[in-house]
Structures are given as C-alpha cells and as structure tokens.
Length: 388
Ligand code: GDD
Ligand code: MN
Image 1 (cartoon, rainbow, N blue to C red):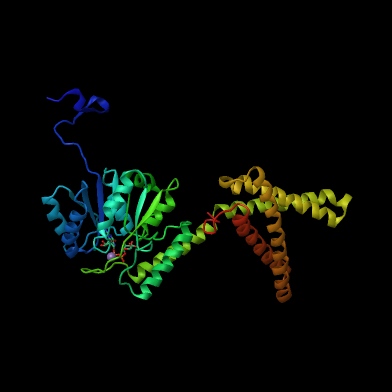
Image 2 (image 1 turned 120 degrees about the vertical axis):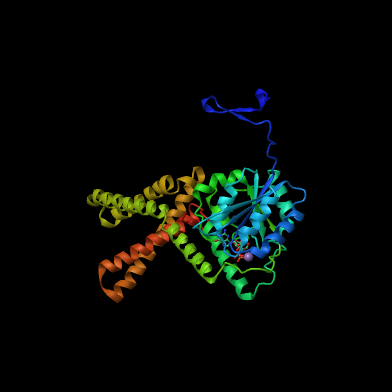
C-alpha cells in the first residue's frame, strides 16, 4: 500500500493517493484555436509530431463550435491519443479568448500558440521552446517581419494593411517588437496566469495584449519564419475584423491620451492658476502689475513642475541633477506654450470676436502643448506612452 511520501495531505485531514499514477512530465502545451478547420487538423497534427519529436508535448485544441466537423475529427484523434485534448466552447467566439483559455487549461511549464491552418511554421518551435524552457526568454515570438521572416505570397495590398496595423500596434503599446500582432509564440505558462485577469481577450490581438499587460519588462525575442499560404479552409480575418481592430486601436490610443496623466496634469494646471492669481493679488500693491504677474507666473510654473513630478509622473520622477534640468526644460516648454496660447487665441479672436472662445481655444492649445511636449522632453516618456 501507499507510503506516507506518496500521499498528498489535504485540509480536513483527507488524503489523496499519488503513488499509482504517473507524474505529469509534459514540457509543452501547444494551444490551437480552431474555427471550421476540418481539413487542416490531421496534416497539422502530423506536422507537429514531426517538429516536436524530441519534446514531451500535449496538443490542446480550442474549438468555438465549428460546424464543419472539426471537433469531431479532433475528438476522434483525442480518443486514440492521450496527448491530444479538445476544449469545446459553446456560445462564444474569438481567437484571443480561445487562446487564453487554452493556455490556462494546462499546467505544462511552457505553452505555445499556433494557428490550425498550417500558415505558421511549426519547424521553428523547438528553437523557440528551448529559449523559453531554459529560462532565457519569457516570450519567443514567431515573426514575419524580423530578419529573414516574411509574409510569403501576400499581395501588396494585404502587406501594406498589415504593416500599417503593425506600426499602429507598436505605437499604441510603445513596443519595438517587429511583429506584435503575431498569433504564433511560445511563453512561460506562469506568465499567462499572471496576466490573464488583465487581458481584454478580444479579437485577434492576443500577443499585443500580453505584451502591454505584463507586470514587468518581458524578455522577448523574435524568431523569423515565412508565413505559408492557406491550403484548406478559409481565413476568418475578414475586412470586418481588420476594421474593428483599427477602431479598437484608435479607441485605445485615445483612451490612453485622455488618461489618468492628462487628468492629473490638468488638475495640477488648475492649482497653478490659483497659485498664480493668489500671488498676483499679494504682490500687486508692492510690485505693480507687470512685475507681480511675472513673479506669480514663474512661481506657478515652478510649483506645477514640482507637483507634476511628484504626482503626474511619480513613476518616472526626476531627482537630483535631472530635477534641475527638468525644471529648466519645463519652464522653456511652458514659455512656448504661453506663446502658442496667445497666438492661437489672437487668431480666433480676429476671426470671431468672442473673447471667451478665443481665450478657451488658446488655453486648450497651450495646455495640450505643455502636456505633450513636457511629457516627451521633461519626463522622457516615449511618444507612444507619452500619455500612458
Ligand atoms: N476558437 C477559435 N475561435 N478559433 C478561431 C477563431 C475563433 O473565433 N477565429 C479564428 N480562429 C482560428 C482559425 O481557425 C485559425 O486556426 C486561427 O485562429 C487563425 O485564423 P485565420 O483566420 O487563419 O487568421 P489569419 O491567418 O488571417 O491570421 C493569423 O496569423 C496572423 C499572423 O501570425 C492569426 O493568427 C493572426 O492573429 C496573426 O496576426
Ligand atoms: Mn490563417
């Protein structure tokens, strides 16, 4: 019978037998989202078998209720091979969420995501898995745009659209990964567990979501491959999916733009206005308007700088010498902002004559300038995340 060592003692003094079961020695789980891919399943499994001959892997298909017989083909294989599993999702759709749920459904230390339609080159998986298993990388990305990678036989039009979407994605998440929209990558399983609650899980942009939601800077590298032409079945990446992706991206970008930072910056700006007016009132009797206002503005800009440094940009706070150079640049930028404010205000006033409209337009442009430019030059936020 079982010895003490082969028992797992659970709360309430219940014991789970461990001895008569082989321990799991699965090194890799390959997650394969499928939607109507019947004719691709068998060729894909054969290709993965060949590529992963030296890796102890399980294949997890995540099917969103395909109606072409896909889950039946997978189930048939799964009955004959214990390393193949089928997760059927009912009443739900989406490549990203299917990928996330597949990756969460395993306890293998490393997970791979690959399309079912053979467009991703499974031949580079061993190299990617080795880089992640060895602890060198958090994520190994199969890349169409890195080094010798390419999109294969894509038309110029599709190539241009994809490049455009890629540049937008890079800007939106402030990343220099060359193929942030890749649907082909290998990563540590504990990482997906870490980030899963933060993922949006919508559409096709799973990797981008993971990269931008990670709690720490990830060690990533790209592995070039040539995107193959689809032989069987049809792509689900319709123009509709592409348009909704772009819409999402613009919305995400705008949301970031109008983010917590801008709100914080604006509140600090309002405090600056109060400081300015209070000082002006205090100094007016002794200094006269021009001198009193000059002192008041200088103090208000200085206090705005310190408040923004302490609150708005607390995650990248300037200290020591950089606090000094930062203050100088902030004064310079706000000076130019004031010029822009007066300039734009005057132009509006000449053409419209409503003083409050002209004043507001000037203030808006001036504040926008101060916010964006100081974010980039004073606090050295990269343009894309200037606003994150
Ligand atoms: N479960 C599930 N649910 N799977 C889906 C869904 C869905 O709603 N939509 C698509 N899939 C599966 C497809 O069956 C296929 O296995 C894979 O996801 C990719 O779908 P395709 O329609 O073939 O996409 P693609 O070839 O245009 O784009 C792919 O490659 C790009 C480059 O790596 C995707 O992986 C993109 O995310 C990726 O950018
Ligand atoms: Mn495809």
